[in-house]
View 1 (tube, helix red, strand yellow):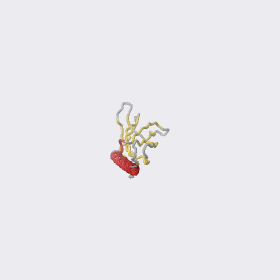
View 2: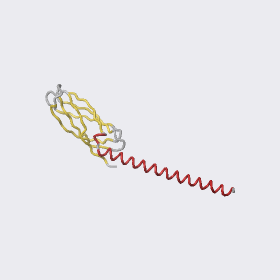
View 3: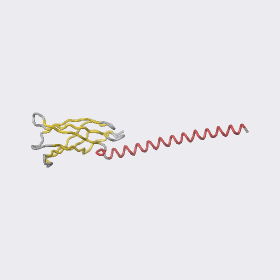
Length: 140
């Protein structure tokens, strides 16, 4: 009887260990699938995961100096060569001109990068609005 009881305990331990391994493997596969889906979502729409902020001032030669920061809010995706749009506005918020520029930086997940650019902005420029247009994705 003790022998059968011992075999029964050994079998139960073995089955439990196998179930733990299967469960661990399933969790790992589920994690990898979720990670893949998230990466795909981030890569499809970089503009949703890159934020931009900045300010402008005039320098002594009359150029408008725009200093800004790009931030990658993605969890997995890495972006580079971010295209931005600069919109120059008057004091009355009339759009005077728009321009496009590429910021040649690599943005890792959660990373921020500063940039600076100079323009001879149209006469009467009071403010500059910044917008992310697109970015290239670095494949994993």
